[in-house]
Image 1 (cartoon, rainbow, N blue to C red):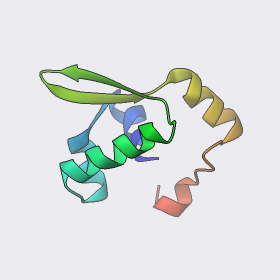
Image 2: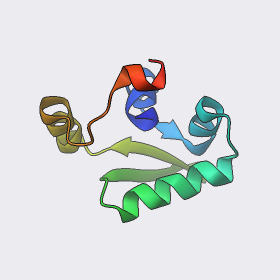
Image 3: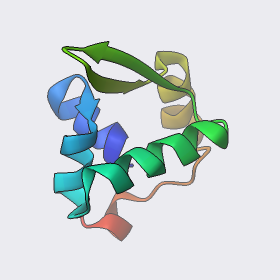
Image 4: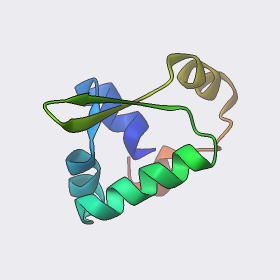
Length: 79
């Protein structure tokens, strides 16, 4: 959900962005992203200036919007 919402705001998301939003370390944010990728969430990772920038696969975002596959609720997270 954090990647989804931050990407809408910023275009791409860094571990630092996730860490600030969740009030966790960048290392833990990276671990969470790795876990999501291992679970099959299609996250696109590109490196700019040696920093990973993340985006959700556009087709997945469209499907998520239509069908809410991850069953995300913005209200649950204070958005």
